[in-house]
Image: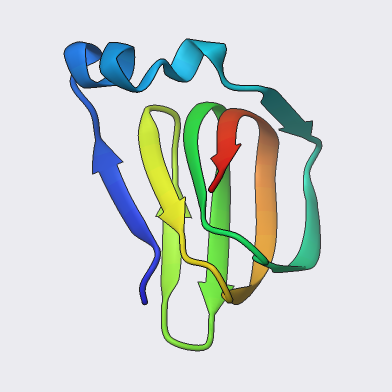
Length: 88
């Protein structure tokens, strides 16, 4: 299952109650990550490149990203990140 990136309308962001989700922050760094659960996140600040076995995605502010359960990947945080996130 691939990483998906969407642009959400303000109405959709409100319906998902994204502003009520916790916030995660990270300074520029590179690290491996494994997803035990699906994660949805909304990027507030920062730029990231995420590389898995099957794809490389570039993530920017305003992106709504879904990482599938079971994904192994490498995060490269280019500029400090702030994101709302929710694990399912």
